[in-house]
Image 1 (cartoon, helix red, strand yellow):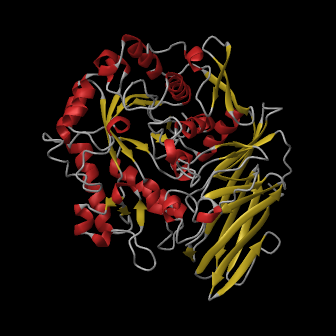
Image 2: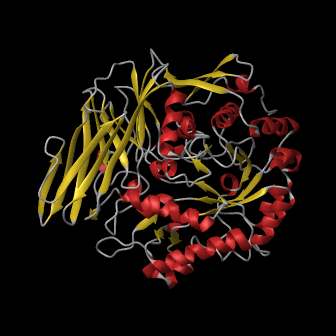
Image 3: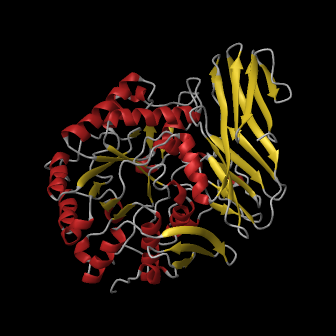
Length: 569
């Protein structure tokens, strides 16, 4: 840790001042740097009310051609993988990196505080990273943040030039109080040793639940659900009933996003408590989807309370989501929307009786810093508030910045991938080079294998759904088996969106096996053939070595052999 060079800048009375390790004092603030036991802590002690500007720790670190740098994406959906010197990281491309046009592609990304450098070997990683030598894979070198509550921590590496910079996103921070800027830990050891030690240092306990398997409605019907569809699909799961423990109603039950207590009376005439009871009658936990911070532009709640939302500096409503024709974001620092959020959670969880909430589009709360707080502080406080609202009910996070997701310990489960899409490669949208959050089974499986370290440590990994059905889907059999196998091995939230009335006997036998908790041990994951294939080294329950491999572009591979099944069509 001693090799890091520290730089911090702040503003006071219209002037900018700098602090460094060599010059840690200044007229209006001092820096205290503590380096010991593989950790570096940097604390700022203001002498007046100051505005933070930049914070960096930089060191030289030559990279061998055989080394890979892990690039952890900004949020749940962001592409995350290992990169070599010649690899390019996806992001908002330079022609769109202008404030007046990047709003839509950048709305769910890190574009507004992380430069989107697409040069070969210029890689960024959020919250933590590691370096692996593929020629000597037994040990990795790790560095991670132990404090995201004072701002997002992100790493930028220039692999060809041989340098790493650790950044703290402190935009918006204004304070006269002592402020912990960095708390970083460096570790070296085997993959599992390093991540066990990291989460022990974080003090994040293991998830309260061990495994979730069941159903979610989204990827067959999207918002076009109704009571008949939901209860039909619920009943059609009876042949695998003993392998299911949760059934989730996704988006589409509400009249408009944000009007959560206004279920569409034509679509759900008996109400959502009736649906929860029917789910409980089957012996399953009842789950339900919400975007708890968001108000659809057409919603009654926004129409009645336009003062509840976050606005930009010029007073315009901040667009939090592009979906549903656009949605704004309620400001959790205003008491009225806080009370509204508390109330609808109380009704949904305690009156309707749902056991788990899937909470989506959470990044929207921290898109812009405000109230003297950084984005990271806002997101952590937002997650704390959600846990307060939900009590001891289960929370499945989604669309959430990964640093706060893993360091706060709020979630029981969390999406670690983008949406899988109904087309294997994501169709036209999945091929657009506009950001790192595009839907596609290709990107979903990539994240599943490269974020495997979070599963069972931070929360249960949700790799999104797999499919066995034959309608309303553009996957071939091999692609379905590959996705299902990757989800089974790397995830512990295993959902389908199928009406199982379509299933054959072979399909039922397949889903029973796929719903089970994996007994494989993952030893390593690597790209081969110029990043065209992913190869996973495994050991089964008997200790026998196996190799799961698949072509990224086609999905063709060894999945059916590894999992030992193939459905009948």
